[in-house]
Amino acid sequence: MAQAAAELAQFAPFHLMVDATGALTFGAQGPEKSLQALHAPHMLKNMAVNAVGPTLLFKHLMPLLDTQQRTVYAKLSARVGSIGDNHKGGWYSYRASKAALNMLLQTAAIEANRKRPMLVVAALQPGTVASALSQPFVASGALQPDTSVSGLLKTLDGLPAIAGAHFVDYQGVPIPW
Ligand SMILES: NC(=O)c1ccc[n+]([C@@H]2O[C@H](COP(=O)([O-])OP(=O)(O)OC[C@H]3O[C@@H](n4cnc5c(N)ncnc54)[C@H](OP(=O)(O)O)[C@@H]3O)[C@@H](O)[C@H]2O)c1
Image (tube, rainbow, N blue to C red):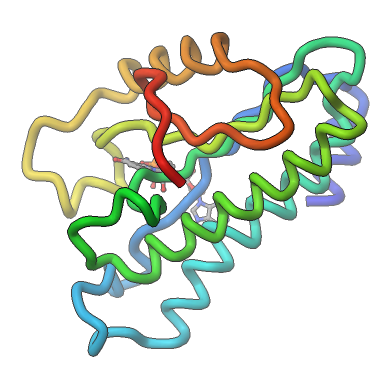
């Protein structure tokens, strides 16, 4: 990540960065449906890929964002990372890793706002989108990626810079943390 940031520095300053990484399935292990299915290595992989990695990426890339103009750092999160919106249970590690991601983004956004008051930080819910990640779990009716992306970009255009992160979906609707 440090090396990638060093190579990108020649193109700085940036005004929009979107981190769209994430994983729901690791090898043959998909999301857990029950407490009895929990397995420490799988839980830790979720945390590493969905929470730790993206936060370290933000750490390395944030210095490349412009300080003189409005800038946006967006990370694909997931509605299932909302604690307030969790009415169904299941998907333990993925949910927990996205909740951890949201907390890390919120904490980083508060700190960043002190020196970068024009920086917008957003945790995004893209909708249920047809992709390699969702394919094993969605029978039909998933959004096409271009529909999700155009909604997300429109949403990002309308978000104000605040002393914290936004948690919002591709239609611009805020999601409870
Ligand atoms: N699809 C949905 O319905 C949905 C719903 C809610 C939230 N999301 C979130 O949206 C984001 C994008 O998901 P997607 O549906 O586009 O899934 P995807 O098609 O599987 O894309 C995931 C991306 O993450 C990268 N990635 C995975 N593990 C990585 C690792 N260890 N290190 C670096 N990169 C890694 C993959 O890179 P490679 O291509 O190199 O493997 C890929 O580019 C994720 O954060 C996901 O949680 C998706």
